[in-house]
Image (cartoon, chains in turn yellow, green):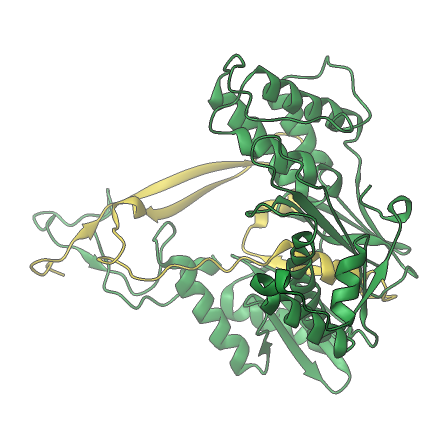
Length: 86
Length: 371
């Protein structure tokens, strides 16, 4: 679409990463499209920011709680397939 | 690709992709429907998206911790904690867990990584006798980065009783390197309560570090070298009730006579929360008691979280401290003119004690864990 008057466009670029497996061999090549977020200005392009980060105290309390329960374990999900190698 | 699921509230235009641009209309832009990585509003939009999804699925959002979600089905429970685009979850019902995994995969393209072994650089070892957390891998990386393989290890992070001040006449050292070391070490306090005090100390000199500060920092690295395998072990069958310890020095800072106070909370035989910080106000003996308020707040907050995750504390939380006046004041309404300026804080403490949420105990120095 045509950029309306007064609006700003943001640059985009590709990020390429090569993921290695445990043996240090090339596992896969990843490409991800990112925006150049640093050109955005607070109050103009966005108003509120918030990163949902759990407090470590909470995470440790969950771990301490689960450690008491036989048969229970903590699982996790992510979009970071990379961690699976660890 | 969880981040990409956030729905944008603002209009965001991006330029055309290189290689995908349309000839003769390079001035045209795309309007984003969904978030892209590195967009400033992306984490927030992603969170509101997943939050509304959780609420729709019958989760209850914790009022004490926004990133904690709990779903209850009869006596069964499912706990989910969000860390940006990582989710950690646990529960005692296979059905609830399976259902949850299934719709997270479908709705957000998430991958099930199975039992948690590694989270934000923290190794989580889940065994039948308990759970151990440590940052061995991270510690090794830090040591390699600052090249101290050939140093001898030492048995404590700081010499007992050593006082460090601004050292204004000392030889200045490279602040960039100093700060890099401090920042790298700081992350280790996630599983290392033993480093908390010294980290809080050395991070005060980041603005203008000198040779003396650098030597203290190096000692921390040397200590780390000998203790890389240290972590916290939560033992099955350990005391599952929360218990707190606190202590503070008296006017420990050489320049401004401010005190440093610390606390640690134990559960399941391991520390779950800890802190060590210099107080923002100068305290004299009597005022020292007011430092306990922060400690009480933390205890109350932790009790609430534990209640939400299905581990209600039936009895008052035991708080150990070695300050007799705090204990007295929390029990009896002996208000003196001298306490006027901190009266509100004491009322808060006393109310908590009255409701029997907190029980103060006097412990002598030797049994206080912080010594």
